[in-house]
Image 1 (cartoon, rainbow over the protein chains, first blue to last red):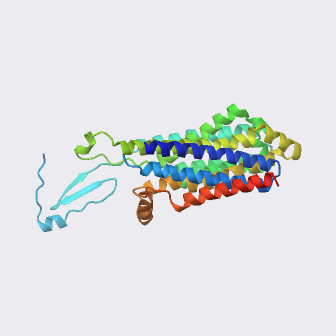
Image 2 (image 1 turned 135 degrees about the horizontal axis):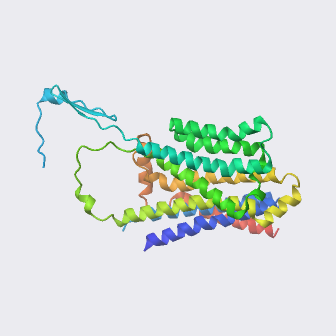
Image 3 (image 1 turned 180 degrees about the horizontal axis):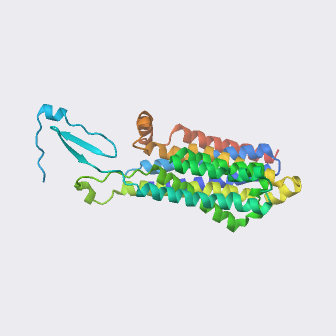
Length: 62
Length: 292
């Protein structure tokens, strides 16, 4: 059961991180460079957590 | 079942196995040649696939848009547009992964960087963008697969292993599923980024308002930024998750041992906690900046 949980979390986090990158592009288009950088770091952090979840999903034993 | 015949030491010493397309076994002065030349049909098929899909990418990404925007006005421009073909031809001739998967895609960007209007979203539209993106993904995936495909020599005899009859373990099926999921995400993520940059109405309106007359150049810059960001993410996230599962590469045996140790840890590593803390801190900072 845990492996599915980790798998779903990995998909949600990696997919969800795209939202932050889109927000970052929006901030860039509004010339709000600081906010764009902050949101990009949030996106990278979220996708890193997603990667860790994917790793945990792979190492889960039956 | 064949019973192995024990050989005397001098006879064993004369056995020479040469790992090449042709295997020769020299036993006691008598030469038995298992002439099993490497079949070339797969290589020819791989070359044909790479050529067809590469030409499709070049046509849809460079040539047709270049004709539309009138970027073939001089001999130098024609040579520039034809430059990717040289990289593609050299890659197929040399059967080089570096040329096919590195030089050719990079050469496609050269005419676009000189004439940014070639990549203008006015020429594409969402549907054509999806078709061209599918063509590029098909070229990269098939090129990568066939470049790494090595057809083994025809075996002299075959005997199935006992484990071959057993069903594939659930663990391997799950791994394969995660591999496919990561592959799909690896295609979707850059496509979404490029789609937003080129077709999001808000961004298009802003660029038209702020960079009138320079929209194509700014779009090219943003596209390159999206691709650069994507490459960083790909190296650290997607390859990062798969790296501990690579096998068969002598050069990374040491790294594999370290990575395998890391991969077997069933608990989140330090970077997980750092990433969670970083996300929370920067979210707080963003809220603070918004209400400053």
